[in-house]
Amino acid sequence: MKLWLVFAALFITTICFGQISMERQEEGILITEGNSNIFLYQIEPKSKEGLYSRNNYIHPLFGIDGYVLTEDFPADHLHHRGVFWAWHQIAIDGKRIGDGWELKDFIQEVSEIEFLINRQKYGILKTEVLWKSPVLKNKSPYLKENTSITVHPRQGKIRRIDFEIKLLALVQGLSIGGSEDAKGYGGFSARITLPDGIKFFGKKGIVQPETNAVEAGPYMNINGALANNGKQAGIVILCHSENPGYPQQWILREKESMQNVVFPGRDPVAISTIKPMVLKYTMLVYKGKLKSKKISKFLN
Image (cartoon, rainbow, N blue to C red; front, side, top):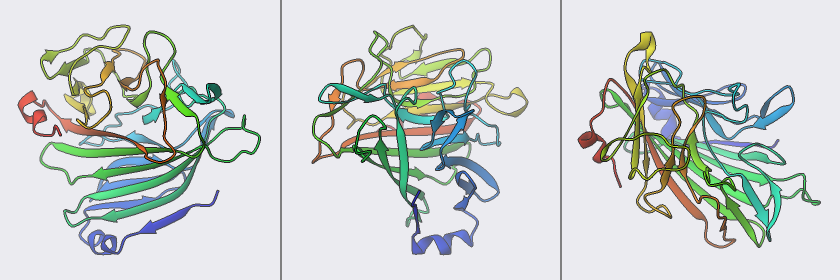
């Protein structure tokens, strides 16, 4: 795999002060802040006994105290992986060519990586990923994904991570969609550890998970024993107001599954060859509790 790894000039200055930085690992890139690990971005494909090959996702995602918040290859759903964005239905002119959710006939080539520090001292990881399918005779990419992950310096008990995902079709007639059942799951997702007593809070208060998607507003606060020694901590996922279908619905699970911001649902949407589809999300990793008034300050 040919991979370009680029560092902005400002990165050299910032690393000297021990703030947001990166370390090249065997499998990917580890983002850190001082002596604290933030997350590992998986570049190299990895699988379980040759099955469920995956890359282009985050795992582990670490809590404020270093607790590992995400899971990879969980026994109940081997295709789940950390923080990821994927769709069941991938088709050209209505003909299925792969399944990015269950990792069937689905290849992602991380073709370029750039890491920089901006003037606000945010760390920015930029990736270019080419989607391919063995079903296609020419094996050429059918979609180019450009994702930007912005890591903010920790502020007190909160760490903010922003995601901007751009999808541009490289062939005509390309579409993506969620599961074809009533659940319609697909899109931005997080497979996090789920201890007993986990709770979900939306803008209007506590939310009860259901089998199908629920409407709960622009963010979801997931709170429970998500820190070392069973202490309280959480993750908030926020949906950007410019996203199509805003506020998007939520698939929520208390046990053995992922949490998903549903887009587009069971009905596929076309991906343009001219103007990329843009999806934006924010994750807040925090310790203790986080009140709705504080969360609302992060809404866009």
